[in-house]
Image (cartoon, rainbow, N blue to C red):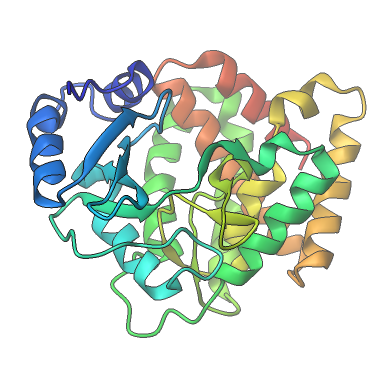
Length: 298
């Protein structure tokens, strides 16, 4: 079959690498090779799929359903492979061997169209938080990027944005100050999902809900939880009580997962400002406006 990347993937990769790196052009052949190597039968390409990988629903030679995932180097698929091995199916999708080609992952099949986001908001937050808690394991002797390293790169881009746009400078200054204080005395170091949100938790067979699509990083738990705070940000912004709801959400999530509330608020601010500025840079002004308004509430 033809392995055409979904438009969402093409658009997202274009934002991440405007000049391209040839990965999309090589993708159809790479997918065919992975299918042949794994002796897989293809059902269909998952649409709309992810923003950083091609996801193909397949069956193994014994008829077992599975997922074939192909991702470019910039999406750090080998880091994802290492994290999935570390979690070994505990609260996360299971890595199926023996496919070990770089950038190619063979995963257990979940229900791709049923995420925690489909639940009522309060129930969704509860289920998502419970899933996330189980992922926070000791990293051991690890190959993963640290929160300090990742946010250090992001901070440089944020400073450049503040220099070019005085309007966002106060928010950027606040976010960078929060980061500096948070990194001065970090608490526990755990293996984190890195990009956790409700849509990253899918219905499964082994467990009711399992996390997918990590961009793993090692650091404090509050960093991981911060992305969950702003889930359904469009609904928060549209609500007259959005700011108050956000503050209650910070408090509730911090208490339920035994995370320091001030540290969670600080990382939520940093991550929201960073995401808002990145959305501006790649030409998504509406998303940027939502995220920066959300950040101003913190």
